Image (cartoon, rainbow, N blue to C red; front, side, top):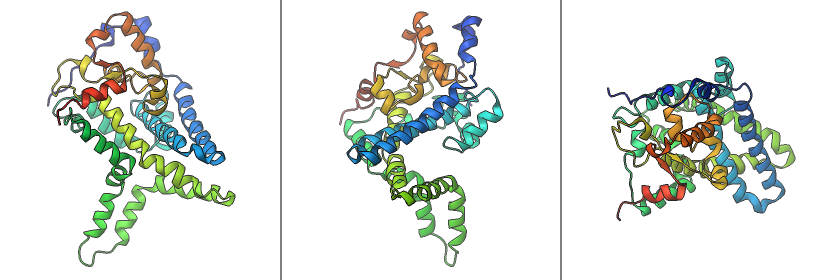
Length: 309
């Protein structure tokens, strides 16, 4: 198997520069996670008080749901907290969950980045695509079809195609166990909000963002990170792309420094909150010209949709 080329941080950073970049804070990662959940709560409150802000709240919450997944990704790299037990407990219980399985999968992506064995290669392989194709994909995302396909269609097919006389109960039992975090969150939230007449908060202000905005921004993030990157790319500075993001893009598409993806692949154990500092140092060292970058998400999408109709 072809393993992706790795970078020695000493090639770019002196020891006094690398030490603070690689240091895991006891509070910064947890503060970012608290920020994500607080923003979700405030956006929900905004929509309850001012119903006309519902579309804005859905976009804000969907982006923070991605942010929570980004912080789980940091936990997969043991970068959320310096104590591994704390790191893994928080990553498993206060983010999207499924940390251990995701860690195995995701570290394989780093080991074989853009090589044939990369499990994420399928996400970047089709690009460039046509603009019409991208709009079709976005339409599927925003109408919930992508969410249904990824989260529920397998269960529906399993039930519909079960063998003659095969009992339904074991299938549903397995489905409940696999989705227990989702179901527990639903039950607890509805139980807490229903006495105040706010039973609709969970389906409208959690499920709808999860089923619409989250799939779309996840897709845009994936495109920005690896679309149009050559398969079997030998240069470790070009296995992933950094996309410069303004404050609107950071708020609605690229939370918690996820846009610094080239730096992340170069130094995958650097915590997300240190990636901007790594970026600034690389700019000063005039390394950016060798790295794969894009000036913004709009310009990157133009590249990704450059295929003729």
